Structure formats: C-alpha cells, structure tokens
Length: 235
Image (cartoon, rainbow, N blue to C red):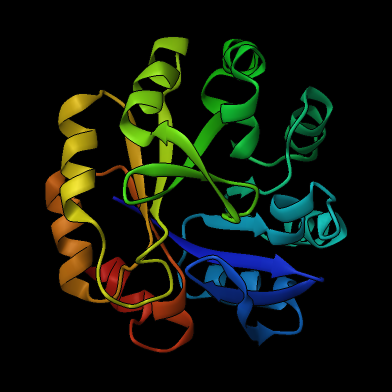
C-alpha cells in the first residue's frame, strides 16, 4: 500500500482543516515547498497535494507553489483542488504532475469527466468526498443528493481506474478511517482505492493494507506527531 503524506495549501501556506471546515484551519508551515522536501527526505514515495483555494472557489491561487514543489522534489505528485476543465488538466500534466485529481467537476459535468478519463486514462483520479454516504461538493461546503457508491460505480463504467475516498466526518478528527465504506468499495468495484480521512494509528495503516487498499493519505496525524512517517513506511 502506497503512503501519501498530504500537503493542503491555502493562501500559499501548508494547512489542515477539520472536517473540511475553512473556519477550523491550522497552519503547519509557511512554506509548503519545505514541507514537501521534508517528507521526501523522510522516505515518502509520493505526495498528495490539495489546493484548498481552488477547491473552494475554482481559483488556483497556489499554482506557483505547486510549480515550485514539482521543480524541487523527485517523487511523484498527485494534485487536486479547482481543476475543472480540460486546459487545467493539460496544464498540470504538462508540468509533470503524475496524476490529476478531479473532485466537484466530476459530479457536475459527467460528460466531461467521461471524456477526460478516456483521453488521459490512468493520469486521472477522481476524489469522492462524502458525509454519511452522500457526496459533498465545492470544497465540502455543499452536500449533493447523490449517493457516493452509486456514482462511483458510474465512474467505473466510464473507465476510471483509481479513486480517492474521504469520509468528511472523520477527516482531521484522529478517530480512525471508515473501514466499512472501504470494504464496500473494494467488494463492490474493481477500482484502486486510496483511503483518506481519520488515519491515526499504525493499526489503522496495517488494517487498510490488509484489506487491499491501493493507498492511504495521511495528514493531521503526521503533522501533530501522532504518527511517524518512517514508522508508517516500515509497517
């Protein structure tokens, strides 16, 4: 199972939100580039970058930071937040981003996401953020009337290969992942699933790995020192 340390960026700072709430933001670093280099030095094999400004309002405020990280680290990057059109996808893939993550736009424009998946294949990952099984959109500030599992199966029919699934209720809460939902995803689809939200202990990591998940994104537990990246990679 691949471990992705998370670097969430807002106003060009490295931050973490609690349950996606922009009013509950903690700043963990003035320079996300230094944070990225730190995780790489500690052995990270890939990084998960999120432009929170882009996710919320579609403006890619943190793109200069993303470009700087891409130029300085040697490990693969996956990036999400505010990428809502073909040009945005092309820009980041041309930059060298390994995988582009599409969130809100996948739900709002199904014909477009189908075409993007067909055109770019495994370079495209869709991020599903859900609360009580319902998909949330626009930086988690709105909840749709769409059941997550139903829409994930639709995405699979479009040819999607890899998915990030975040349980908003657990994100930043250090209360463990939603193992039940990940089990449903693994049994109900053939997608490579990346877990996100609530991963707090080495036992959480071992359990997800034993379940057969493709990857795990870890944020607050690393920044707060609940988990050591070296120990996570070793286990």
